[in-house]
Image (cartoon, rainbow, N blue to C red):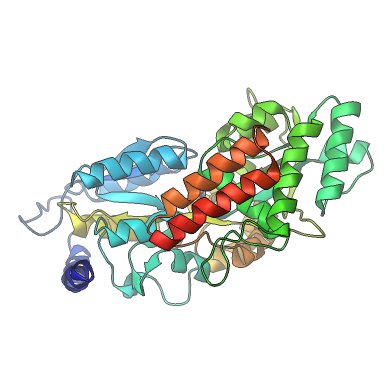
Length: 429
Ligand code: GLC
């Protein structure tokens, strides 16, 4: 109660501060300007995971040229969501001001906001009605905006067009088709059949949630109780475990995150891959380690009885509560999330924008033909539960599912154990 009251008053004060600072920042752009003390203007850092950040340095150089007294320095965080989380949290718990703007995975908003680690923002920083609604919801906690949506995400199924054509097959829409095609790939074409993010970390929680949803279930019920001791979750886990047991998912995939699975697909050793849209950009450019440019396609995830359901991913930009220059931080966030920047980021790194209109611009669709499909996948994607304890929740999911995939525990024992663990976490949360 005490905490909630403190949080509300702090929230009001901080909202106001950011609004005022945001207004004044627009006027300060001249190269000769020296920001007055306490203006909230000055040099800042931008912390972001380092996967596919080819877009970043050109945009930062552009910003720095126009704002010499408010220069931005990038700080690259590790590849994996879990490692990024650990690094950010360690710094924020120590009230460190080392990060000003942080690119936050959509799953962290509740925890970071409730701990007072990020600054609440006025809703007016988002252009009304222009951003994908589900992305805006991931940046909102208890009715307040805490970050600006930056990139959205929904996983897609990548497939080798050359192999499917040779085998006279269409991209699979069901798990049965996928398993049969993947099995054929191993015997007839000496390829690995199917890959995804099966290392024990957030990516596995995403893959498992997608499988459960694609069987018609969900990890958490509408009333907030765990829903993993169910026929849908059992069908999902059985599907993935049978891939490892029957050999159409390679054992190596037990250690794959996004990047490791991308590399396997680009090396030409995999028929099917579940991964995020950034892989489309990377795999389209031929080069050392990539033999699949021009030989792959993407479609929506398959499911138990027909098309499946993706998990909503993405990143939001937040201002650290310990930033010394929050006004510059907000102005930089506005710059990075402008339509022009997001268009550039899509073209350069194939990261899904949050501006709805970019999904139907003809020149963009010509380069990324899957954009309309991706927009539908994002709009239909399921968010992960917005829990303060999300990290605990996800660790329980990924570690138990990983044990089942490695066949150290049966499907039914894994789901019973997971259900009990999640019940405790959800009750405490
Ligand atoms: C991607 C998604 C993010 C997800 C992560 C899992 O970065 O955008 O939401 O949590 O992958 O590895």
